[in-house]
Image 1: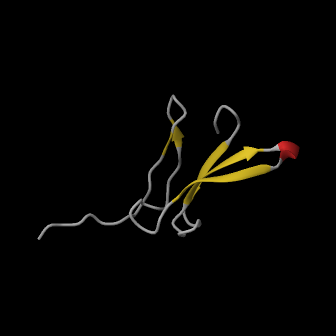
Image 2 (image 1 turned 45 degrees about the vertical axis):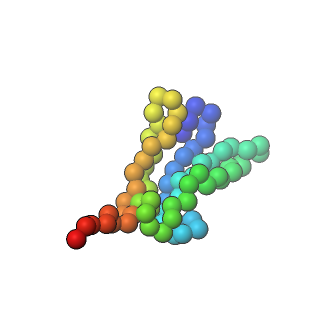
Length: 75
């Protein structure tokens, strides 16, 4: 949760590519929550299956992803 009360989280699956998302929940009037997808992990290459998030001292979010494309090897 940030200083304004917004909640941040991840999903292991789901999103457009079914590889997980990073989302923000913002409280709206009447107590309802609005979801905003901050990042939608592509099928491969960006990791997918994101982990927990942490804030640094400036309010930036950090986390890790699992999987992703294997690096190319030279023959």
